[in-house]
Amino acid sequence: MSWRILVPLLWAAALPAAWVAAADWRLRRRLWRVLGEEREPGPVAPWRLHWQAFETRWRQSPRAAALQLKPQEYYGLLAAAVGVPGLAGALWRGPLGALVLGLVGGLATLSWFRYRQAQWLAAATAALPALFRSLSAALRAGSNITQGLALVAAQTPEPLRTEVQRALKRLAVGYDFDAVLEELSRRIPSRDLELAVLAITVQREVGGSLADILDHLVTTIEERQQLQREVRALTAQGRFSGWVLAALPPLVAGAIILLNPGYLTPMLHRLSGWAALAYAAVSLVVGMVVIRMLVDGAARGV
Image (cartoon, rainbow, N blue to C red; front, top):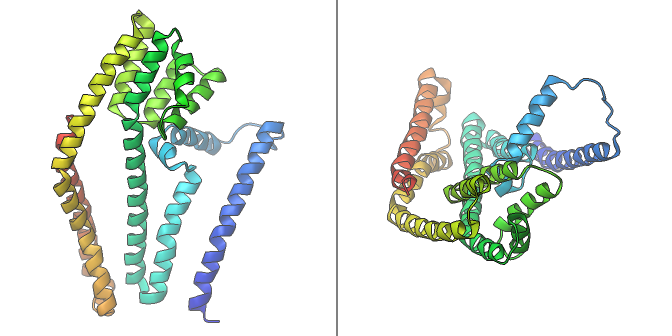
């Protein structure tokens, strides 16, 4: 069997094996923690402290909430998305093919992650008015805020329902109420939710009718969401133009490699060629950022 065929097959077999081994290791660590059988009861190494802090920040991030992935899984998938196409491109067209296909694979995966996160955040934010309206009704019926959240959690649409139930579980095991609300606002980075958390925190300190506050808050959130939809419709053409301009250079490079494989090869054998590629990549990123800032400028003020 040719090595050009054998190497991709080995990669394809190694990735599932590594995934299963990582899952088995996570299960063993969980069992050790539950049974109190940690093998290293001595001082914790500094790198483990840093890793635990990183995992804590990851659990509180919107990426963890939206993608339901651990950091090892997230970066493992990203590395596979770059490495597997890059290896295929290296076997197919050499270094230039590895560069182009690896870049395309990485950017496509990052774009998919961002798309999933944006869709998740939009769905969670859209469900906030219904949650607060039901919570206000529960408070008027005589429940406190924790009991009200427990009552309305089951009727809350996904994905907000999962986050509310997660917050309730943390409250049940003794976490501070304000800390749970702060973590919820970090996992759902919405200005509407930040406003609600601020209102609940102030009401807990100074008193007042939380049901009336939530009613006014629902009206404000619905007006803001309506305005955001209008702004997004007006800026749709700018966003589409940005995606087209960002995708055009990699697509043209891929077409050139397919039609004339040796056309771009001299660029890889000269310093000026690498400098031109680096300049093109930096210019592409800067252009995407500028277009994004221009398009999202109006939306930030809403």
